[in-house]
Length: 346
Image (cartoon, rainbow, N blue to C red):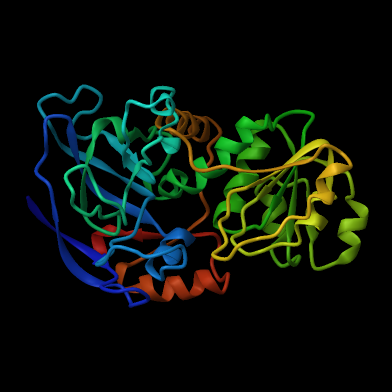
């Protein structure tokens, strides 16, 4: 075991504070990663504040991890000391179910072991990236291409794959009209990726406050959902709507914007139940779906794609002492567009 500096919430809804955690010794197939940067995801706040259910405390959040390998186990074949690597939302899975064998570890029948707020196969709680080091099985680590700076790559380990996976699955590309609901940490990356895939991209945001940024980052159009005329003008327009917000929406209004056979895919997860009126689906064989992150192979594919297109997150780099303030700013939408912690400051 190794003692590592970290920032943790000692109890539900408590401010995060500096502490020390224990990391396991490097096993045969493990890599020890010196974490350089860790993104702050809205889901970190949901879990620290138990918005999605009971948590495990003390909790060290962080599943957008970018760093450098500093030690490898004797059986490791994929990585060497000095490699630039990342860790996303999961650090293990059963490896035996059909989904795991297909590279869809995010849909493991036994549920994947989450990077934090989970229990590993050793029975110990998992701790995330708001720390200086982490030990992870090589099979749940991905390589960050040289073309991506580690700080802007970190948010891709969640925000990137969470948007890339559904965009690929629902065939966003040339000739397709894609709407991205919300232009925050997830939404701005979704816009970049959808644009790079060749789709015609529209942002649907509450206001036009971020319109200039949206157009600069790849959107072709930008509309305010607070304006009722938006839903009149765009009726029946989109092949795919990617909903990145974690607040309840008027689903009937958004579903009316889909073409025949269009799909609305939800990657934001509200803390409260949502209601969908089935009549809003009937007229044009529309569908409502959801998507989790991506499996390890697709996460690597996403990073390679982003490097090829020179695509990273728009970030605000902060010190660890600013984490609690950053949480409040995320909740008030005061970030453009992802906070990233410089873990050297922990």
